[in-house]
Length: 296
Image (cartoon, rainbow, N blue to C red; front, side):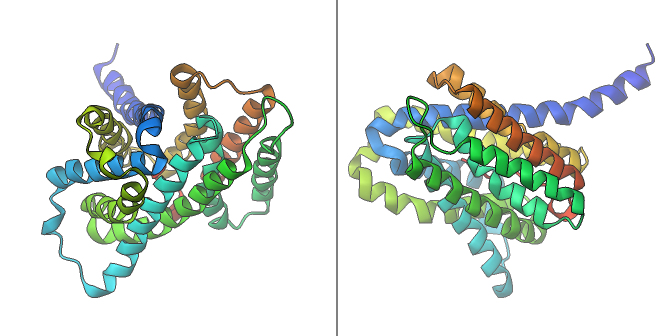
């Protein structure tokens, strides 16, 4: 075997493996976060995750060294606020909606951003496919019914994810990797008061710290770092297409870790949204390809 070709194949697959591992890490962290809900609720779990993630990212990126000009603050603040609200609403959705379905609904945010960046008539097909997926997720009667309030929270998280992409790209271009640390701090400022109001001093329970730290590492510090490496080593269109697998990975994590079983129609709905997201990522203009994984 030619050593050069072997090395080239390895370099092509390495960023793919890193991105897949990052998505698996995020969804595993979301599954673990649900174990905190009985003790501190969804808002408390969000507060713990973002507060601890802020400490970890601050130690790594040292955001206090950033020089932020006055005209740069609006995009940075909107990036952080949208990140905080996205996490709050996504975890609120997880209280009543299965993980895979919540991610599929939330994924309409980056899908909308990708479609907005396209000017091709053929992209109408991706819109139709996404709408079909959403229709299949409409509440049914019986055991597989979907909680409308939880679904609304997931869609709201999708809106925030879209804003996160728009303002995060601008802030990231201005400040680089340190943007994540400062943005997460702003998100924590937004989310922590909600957690304190709901859970109070229960947030300080030493028994919760190991789980909360695991959620912060799995859902924020580790995947954000891996995604940053992967994005620098692969085309942004490929990055966007692979990110479309996240709802399926979430559904599988929900099945394995939370025993959340979905109906055949719900699996078909997730598949339709994945195909729509992948297609939109492949045909959109380059500036909106790399959505990043702001989710949950």
